[in-house]
Length: 167
Image (cartoon, rainbow, N blue to C red):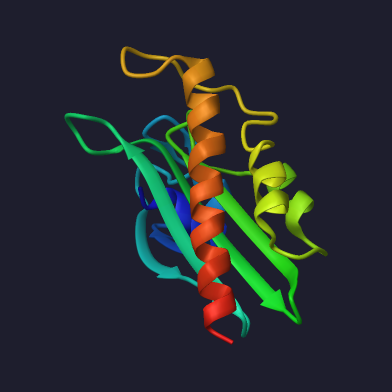
């Protein structure tokens, strides 16, 4: 579950190894199924999550695997609302593809307008755009694409409610 929120929040991962320290943006840390950009002799020393601007709120929603409880699809949303307008949207998915990814089409559909249920639904319908969804015994690629839309919409709805309530 954790890759989606750190990607949505644009966290930085500090890594130590024999060649010193380096910083990896969270979106670049996850390279595939159970694989990262870490070298074999590197360890994570710090995760820095920037504080979101005023008027921001977040939410996470997932469809859990029935046995492991890991996300079959999980969606993290971070929204910044100012004067009734979505000034910033960050949405990331986990479980849908082989790594955690930003849902940039969703973000673009939200920014610059009000966070109405209709805009949220229209934006969420773009959740699987550009994704090569995984398929397995629990969920086919088509079902995962559908779950991505459903859980992005749920996360966005809660984050929008929280952003409006925090003002």
